[in-house]
Length: 73
Image (cartoon, rainbow, N blue to C red; front, side, top):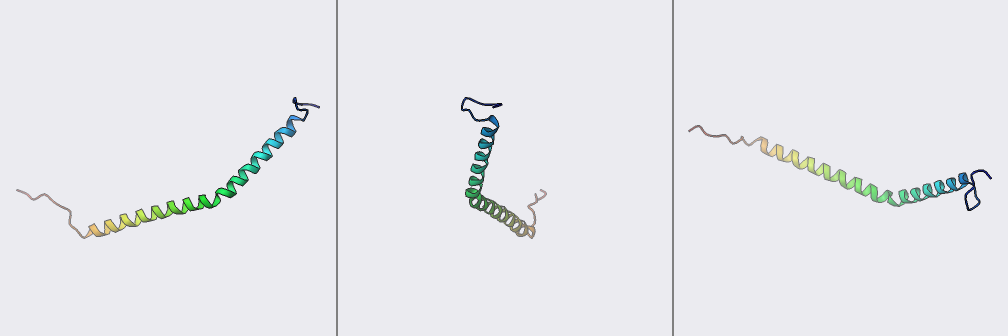
């Protein structure tokens, strides 16, 4: 057989099996992590939105307050 290894199976076949096994493992990990990933993304979005709202509220609150100015002496 062309490209045989010490185990007697073709290298192409072994490579295919390794690729398929790796793909299956990635698919399992993706399915298992999908819910966690969505939760992290949602949490990050909430944090960003909260930060933006807080910043806007602070700006609006200080907009009516005149800036401190040094009095001429």
